[in-house]
Length: 239
Image 1 (cartoon, one colour):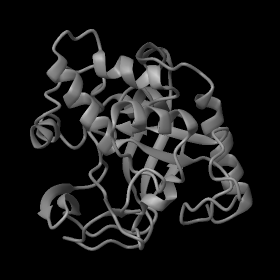
Image 2: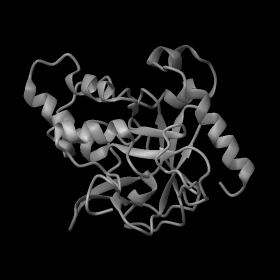
Image 3: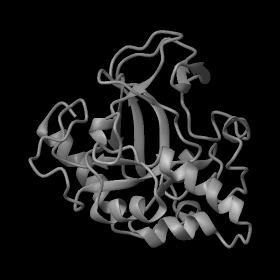
Image 4: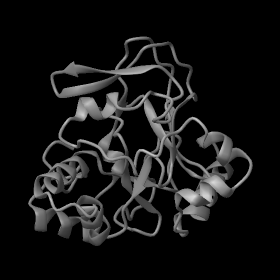
């Protein structure tokens, strides 16, 4: 987003999907870019997964099936698993395509998250595993009024009117760093993860969790009810 016009276009593209209830059928019946884009993607949201096995969850799908456009892998770091590049990447390269209700899940309420965690399951351990995954991978995205590095320029970072709350499935695994080398960009069908600068082979890929903003009122209540921390500045002690 190097210009205001670019920023507005991205916001407009996202609004066109943000206020619709998208489903898999809408992707499969539409012609053009979305159908072509989804041809290599697997609907990871609808796949039954072992949420306790996070490495196995990543290994369940190929990079292409998860929407990755570059070669990456996950390696041990002092902060747990981290995401690393296996190739040299130019600034502005799309790293991963996120398509709503395919590999990108949006939450707009506590009920949304609770329904996702239950998913018709009677196994309470499965519920807890999903809940733990959500708390670790849920993030926020400001859809407009951000600078070219993805930081919200508005004074009111608590507003929900231009915010996306959700998670990738499987999660990206980006660790926190105040000098990130990735950024999120809204598209007509979801959100892209994009290289913020040139990335060299074996570089770790980072997000700056401060860009997630503060949590919404309902997310604070969700964290209180379930006694969990979230990746927002007002919900933990490390951002």
